[in-house]
Length: 485
Image 1 (cartoon, one colour):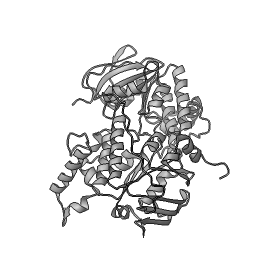
Image 2: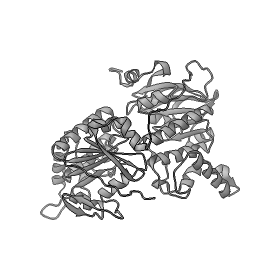
Image 3: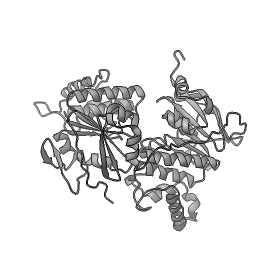
Image 4: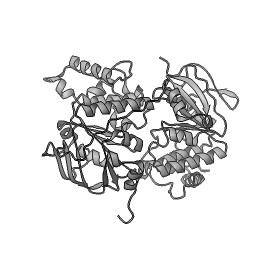
């Protein structure tokens, strides 16, 4: 199967052109070709009226094409100005590195983006994700790019930060810069783009003027079928259930979260939401034994338990699908088989030896159950689409037969088709009696999937809502920090 097959597409000067499609549709492959990371086997690229061929990203940058990847490529131990000028450091007339010149230039590039409060000498590791995103854009601005490719640029941004990013995109557009915008968030695609190109299975499907189409049509083109039926989960009430599987009492960890108390029941999906920085991921990492042990009490089936390590959590029947799929979830250089079986290998050993036949049966079974699209179990997982990587991580923990499953942003960066599959899987797991703690920033997802909704703000629980009293407005009221609190 070809990653890209006979794709013909054009981008106009000074437009915002969205490219959408399910995971595995070929979007990233196309962009990696345009940015010089991959070399195509056939076809041609015509830029500014002439045929070009890039051997490496530097060739594309020199030609005027820059790409900001979803996984930011900044060097955390270097300064802002060093990252902006990486690979092309300025020299003074004595042949020495011109640090002051690069600092002055960096201040100018940041100022063009309306950023006047960052010292170019600061290390990247000291910046927030949104600030790092701005440094990536400043680097692209410094290249004086004609085309700026943005791959899921808002995936780690707050709503206000996204508004600011769109303002910057608008200013670049006014200067004649073309932005290729890749996103799974349809509301953003329709808000920012002039045209939308749809890809499916490595092929070009269609290009629409944004003003002449709608979300339903675009999604139908993406998946190749009508999307009239939306996922719906039956209502379940756990607000008066007095027999929780998991009970957390007064959990606190200095500078992370304070006085957290909640219950989680068998077969329940408990939603946990809040603004970026509310402390959600820190809470679940502590529950899974990743961070230092917090004060407070954790009970499972009414018995106090100690979770001092990840091994303790696994032994208690807790599984965690972390927020950072590529950085915390998958083992990139390992196979699909190894990624699925790694947590359950202790149960597949005979003495000092692994039962390879038993391992293979387990992995093949879950590849089939989870409908993981892969050439085979020995394929390196890094070559699978994001949705299939996520299903493999889920398979890893399901193979360990958990009682409690923590899902931290499980559909982050996943297309609509794979998202629906994850929803159906979550629903079926809850019906089997698995207790699920779902952390999500997407309010429609929380409202669709959760039986109860817990809202965090500034490291505290601001409220727990039953499904019938929850709405986006009510959740946001609880999520916004209270003045003077």
